[in-house]
Image (tube, rainbow, N blue to C red; front, top):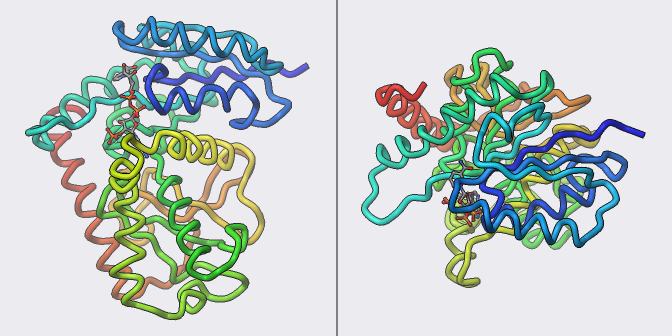
Length: 329
Ligand code: NDP
């Protein structure tokens, strides 16, 4: 039998946590033959609710779930962690400036980065879901100097999946016929969902949606970028289940690889590719294999795409400069 993989989830008692933990425990994160230990990190006020979720996990009698630890101590939560899903974050409240938000999250992701550095397993893989995800991931990464930088990633897979779904609808095909979609930049309203290199039903992505620049600019791009707000408005609550699903997809693809002829989108530390400044955590098209990923190289970037990518990257550079000024990185 295989050794269990230690999976740490922060903010485990929250909405996303509730949609996430049961799927991790049932084998959707890593594979149907991989046993897991769950390590749940919460703030003290969240511990009791986390206990309740753990009771429900017990009641599922998941064959792959070995052990559950609940703690408010980061060192305990990340002890021997192989995979860490950083979901808990300080939400933006009314009247909060960007600097306040970044500072509050620095107080969470800085210490968590250090705890990962000091306690996690050598093969640790980190996905940051809590917003502002890219910059929270950057803060954690910079506070973990002994961990290879590429192990820290931010989630743009929900944006990617949203784009795939919209394109399939528009082209009248099933989602599995939509390939090579890219989310560039920040997981924010400035993100750029790129259809120009996509393949839909075997055709070029832009042609498959009628080469319709107006649809692209006035419908598709804002639809994907503002989908979270739309869900809140219609559902009356945030998109927790689809966010949890995307987190599962992100880690599953990272560990198990992208399919031949396809790629995915991940927020990763830039190596300078496509003119994105080295060191920031920005979303790129990536292929994955054997637990490693590579940025897809050589894509031709049109002037339209260039301006969109640059705008999102400029926002990330601004966030990086702000957290540097605050002494968080
Ligand atoms: P959720 O579980 O709904 O969301 C958690 C984080 O995920 C937020 O930062 C949220 O960002 C982000 N997020 C990313 N994508 C999405 C998406 N598509 N839809 C919704 N959220 C998204 O928050 P809850 O308030 O229910 O739960 C948070 C939990 O975290 C609480 O139990 C709290 O106690 C805990 N917490 C734990 C910490 C720790 O372990 N140190 C620190 C802080 C909180 P956005 O705000 O932009 O929606």
